[in-house]
Length: 507
Image (tube, rainbow, N blue to C red; front, side):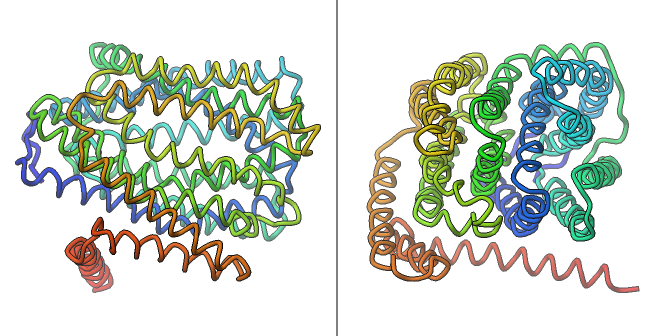
């Protein structure tokens, strides 16, 4: 990795792929390591608090997500890109980003609380909103630190922060739930955890090259103007789940909100490999779009190919074996969420493709166009939710199937327009070949799953997934060289981690 010397930094073309692969692997590993802990916390929270309270938590989270957009103001898109192109201004940008969050937080919370009061929600939701919003402010400040570090094209510190936050939160939340703690106690523990993680990130900034934070009018203005196109995009992303949850709570039932929340939580966990990839990819693509567009296209093409290989077993597993995820939360309380998952498995498939496509479009400077595309999702939810939720509630007793269907329709529209907006030269014959073999391998996985349908799903699912990998190996889409390369990277990371732990344990 190139070292920061205060100016914009270039990475040798041959090293770019390794840089992105290493960062993506770090972020993927950090999220993979924490998935069991995240599942445990969500499952225990759902089991001990019940579907109704879990639904309130999800509803408060969707409102908070809407406020989070104004807190971050698109900085997640512009901050790492600006730092990647000029390391010298990192401290000025981060200090200004944190100042923006401090100034706007009280105003945003007041608006959110007023909206909830206007919609007729009681004190339980208001408490959930207050505590969730405090957690969101801390999360937003930590995200600004991570975005700045990612601008240096480093993923190690954000990865460690993610792992530390999840395990520390788990270590604190689980005893609180087991000893009878309710919603406020759980959220209070989350706030304490986020505060500790934020302090650790701030202490790590000098090691990256950010030695002094400052606030300047020019930096605030640059972040405001540069982040504005991303705000429209993020606003659409936050508005859609908020609209879905609000409509569902009014036109469906509180239990249906809880079922829908569980399905959405599981989908979020399953999407982590793609989100890790784009987290590592975005700052590099922003730099390459300016420095080397040929390399930009090669990296974009490679990201799409990687996502195509990943998405099929994940989405098929979600569709074929939804009971595995539901059993973790409680089949008795959240059994209807399995139907939500079956519909959302198609949504997950499209989301895996939308993530790298959207990243390529954003890095190419088409923020306004992509924001407009995402805004169409809000219109779909506004139009279809009032029609679909009552219909599914009457006919299936689960109004949550309505927003699941609306989300699928909107994501299909987004990916279609996303491919149209992508710069030319990315979609080639090699990518089409990968798509074909992924579909054929997915069909093989579905056939194996059908043949093993009488087995326990916890046994059948791994066998079916292995059949997908075997089919890719037979078609030549995955080779021995690819497997050896991945094993080598994992081995190197393990040796480095063991060496660090050994050094840390020495007196």
